Image (tube, rainbow, N blue to C red; front, side, top):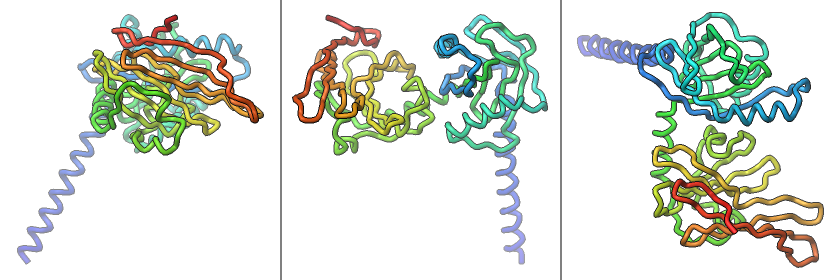
Length: 314
């Protein structure tokens, strides 16, 4: 009988401490924006609702501008692009229907789920005119969402966590060496050397969220940068290969599309690549048509400079 009582007490304490840990995690998530510590946020995705009233050129210019946004938070403030500091108030009010739809779409694309206690809604007291933001700010666990007045949503994740996850991913990647000559994308047999990664990094690496099934391979580099090959499938299920340069802190420096296929009615245009030991990148755009010999359309050269950018050369 004493053993049963002791066992019951032990189980009760285990459950109690588990609940306390979970409660503390929820509390910590709820107080992310109230922390004294400055938190840096990494933009991980942008999405928008179809809005025919927007001028396409103006709309895409705004999207391009938004991609450079820098967000930090400290205490009850949101700091935009280092100079615009705005006060936040937590609110129980619901999101507007348009913002709620944007949020739901984004959560689905990022494969995110949450408990109601993880959800925190804030409003910005005084809005800056920059980026045409509206007043709503949503925090769900370690993600932050901003909304614009023309129905764009921006998803951010705590940058330190992104860096930690990327460091963990990089440590598991297979390594290949230069030179490389049109490998790792035109043959399905070679894809086994790539490591699949979560689609939440799609925007981080590609600058969009339309491609999927991300796979990475690491290139041995003598420069003070990280070089990765990124394989993805586009909306037409064609394979694309990108060359990505990163800082040692896992900030994207530059990206270059080096393997692409444009389908034609009777063939396709293929971008083939080579990278020599001196980091000279050659891109050949070749037209392939049925019953015809391949035709070289263009040849372009790039070098990787010391900062890790891909510079076109003659």
